[in-house]
Image (cartoon, rainbow, N blue to C red; front, top):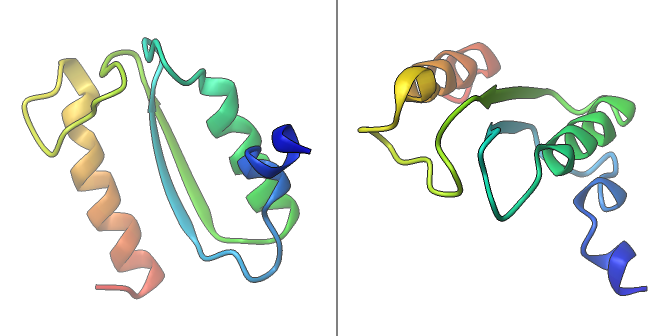
Length: 87
């Protein structure tokens, strides 16, 4: 029961809001699979979503000063927010 309760992909339903997901491949705490499964759950429920997985960033992707291409996430997020009509 705890696994189900804490599995984000199993909590998705038609009332789940749109999601912009950012994950780092080198995250030592949460595997990328978790974001992939959540994204899949969003798609299965026809929830608008955008998923971006970067090679670096560990478990602390910040607003700036990230390694390599990870800094692109803020521009991608802004574009997605505009596309969704939130900005």
